[in-house]
Length: 384
Image 1 (cartoon, rainbow, N blue to C red):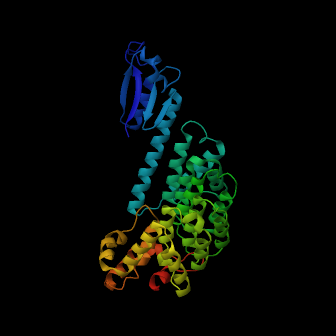
Image 2 (cartoon, rainbow, N blue to C red; image 1 turned 180 degrees about the vertical axis):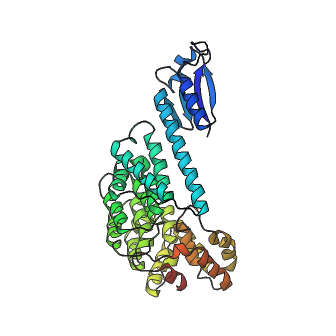
Image 3 (cartoon, helix red, strand yellow; image 1 turned 90 degrees about the vertical axis):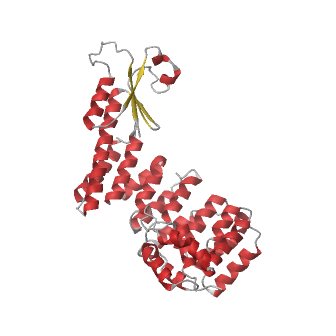
């Protein structure tokens, strides 16, 4: 991303380097950061185009994507922070690629985050962008963030929630982390639907290896979803599809028909649960619910899963996508893709070697859920 600073078209000091842009140039040269300079006349300093960058009509200004800074001290501090974070990221990448321990970096990141949150250094100016980068580095290095700090960021810093959720998704969902999420969702600070939707999307793609201490917290989180509106219902059904059992999911679908039936998008969500109903009783109820509905999305998605299960041509069309893990997901697979995988693994018309390969390639996605219901069991059972 190109950095652009502003400087005088004709410097009043006659080129002696006393103008404030010199300090910014010096800092950029010290860290070896390429940049561009846009020269500004004295008249242009007071024009609207420049005043939107610096309301005091002075130089220098600093532009980097959607980030705009003015005041020399703030700019130089940002350059220093940016350089430190870039250097740390490169060092992490190098050490991790070489299999070298990053314990020292892990401790440093944890310390910087903790001190920054305590001191308020992320509260002003460009602090939020800097905080996002520290959270990302913490996730990459496996640096610990205390439950108190996680809860505080989720509740009080909406701008970094998605980054915190991504951090939590990178590791096993411990009981303490499940508690943080449940308490945050029930704190009353989630004033918009988007926050709960983001939490839900990340939570359904989080690794869960054991059920101890988590089921109660996740149950509390699911119970906090309001199924009388579309966003709340989406969150409830989506979390139940990972953390609940088939009877609970079926009951939730049946009791909310007046909400999802008019919505094609929610209908597609309901149709995507086709591979989760393996018992004859649950399958029959689900089958009747979908086939008798007039929801185009539900019927289309349901039929797609049946074709993926029974048609070797559809399996072949999806095979390349299903066998390649998603590198951005620590489970190696998104939740929608995992549901497709479950249907594909039930296809008896394709070579066993191909379904076995799909299992191996997506092994991280087959970790037991907190309810004790194994996705492997779901995939290997038949319905209808």
